[in-house]
Amino acid sequence: MDILTWTYVLVGLSFALYIGIAIYTRAGSTKEFYIAGSGVSPLANGMATAADWMSAASFISMAGIIAFSGYDGSVYLMGWTGGYVLLALLLAPYLRKFGKFTVPDFVGDRYYSNKARVVAVICALFISFTYVAGQMRGVGIVFSRYLEVDINTGVIIGMCIVFFYAVMGGMKGITYTQVAQYCVLIFAYMVPAIFVSMQLTGNPIPQLGLGDTLSDGTYLLDKLDGVLVDLGFNAYTAGRKSTMDMLAITLALMVGTAGLPHVIVRFFTVPRVKDARLSAGFALVFIAILYSTAPAVAVFGIYNSIETVAGQRVKELPEWVANWEKTNLIIIEDKNQDGVVQFTPDIETNELIIDKDIMVLANPEIARLPNWVVGLVAAGGMAAALSTAAGLLLVISTSVSRDLFRTFKPSMTEKRELLIARISAAGAVILAGYFGVNPPGFVAEVVAFAFGLAAASFFPVIIMGIFSTRINKEGAIAGMVSGLVFTLAYITYFKFGVNLFGLSPSAVAADHWWFGISPEGIGSIGMLINFVVCYVVSKFTPPPPQKVQDLIQDIRIPRGAGQAIDH
Image 1 (cartoon, rainbow, N blue to C red):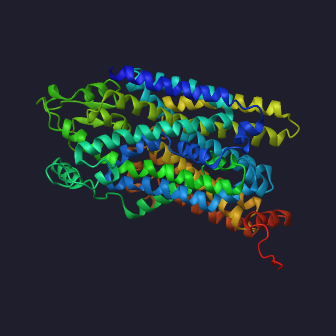
Image 2 (cartoon, rainbow, N blue to C red):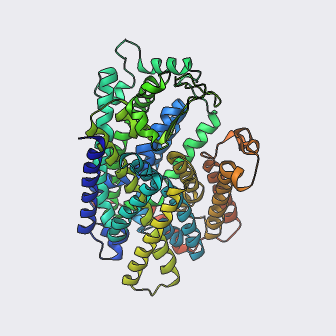
Image 3 (spheres, rainbow, N blue to C red):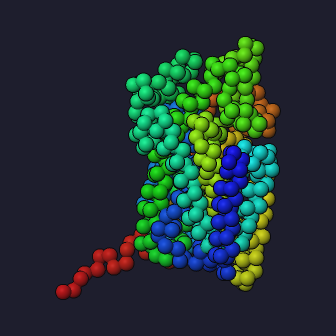
């Protein structure tokens, strides 16, 4: 069968599986809709958390950005992986013990204020919509290539699928759908990586193939360095970002992870605090499989693409180039009319433009793997994008129905709350589709902005809310607002200032960044502002009520600690 037929078969079967699970696990109560009835096993929750966590940015875009950024792309690996460890060890067990469904729920009760709850809802919506924009963009990219439709049509198809199982199944349907999606995406990611590693180095383990030798005895990374230097680029293994920016981006991604509302809510779907810790451990193992493979996929992809395109005659280019040119995600323009593709760092002479987001998806075609592998990767990319999109949409609907409507209408019936949650999810799907059609950047970049917003708004008030009894509602509100506004303003100015404010490109160039920190890393500064403002305002305002202080002590200290044992 050809690529298109295999894609229809494998994507169709996976979609049928997801929809079947959504129908079978349809939520019948608000508890099932919000947290799957707290009845998910640690193993299943670990797989669902991994799928929720490994979004289109991880599956589709992370290897692409590493492929084109080289050493600098390692910030995404370090930040996202380290951030999950931070979340699992430092926050998840305490939040689970606190017993609230959502981050705004925690903020509202911990800071004994509906104003704080509303501010947290606004932060959650900003983060979730920014994040979901990247997922819907990933959905559109997959459909545009493999189903031979334009990206906008692909986004609309993805909206319909997510609408069905997110609105019907809620967290219960999403959880078990994500278990299936994890199995699909990890199989789809590893199979081509193993094949290409065998082709290039003879080593079936991609992580080891990355540091292995080619058939001519040259180390793969040394060969790639030489190829890029010969073309006029920096060596692949050489860093170009400043140390300050590397540190800031890594920190923003790490602490942003710990503030992501759609990941935090996963730890409420298990029965006990012990299960939350156990599922976090399972999830880390499942995540590590993909994350440790991503650098190898990046190197295999960029090496093969340069070898098969750069310096080749335009009329003799491989079939994969023509396939991806149809999507406008790869562009070849023979500027000097010599019939040969020139790949250079100079924009005036460069004749090859490759979208970072296609590297993983195009990798099997570049390596001339069997057609079924190409179709499998399409199914995996869809699974990654849809799993995270569903989780984010649930956070959005929960924030509206539970944290807003329930706050101002506490007498609302459970049936009405469930209806509002489903309507909110439907509205969120439509808005997410708009952002997918008009994304503010490529997938990993957009997701990095979401992490920065989470770092600047949620992380400080969550961490201080757990480990300090002195931080009060005034401090929390002031900290969240200042951190979010600063980070959002910085990103908007430096990423979109040319279009929004009519600024000259030089005014928003990298040499104007504060302390040399890029918009992707500015969340770390926003986080520090949040911490300082929160602490200072709390210092000069009344402390929290004694019952709140006692509650904080209770969630931190295990029951029975310090009690003597009678013999």
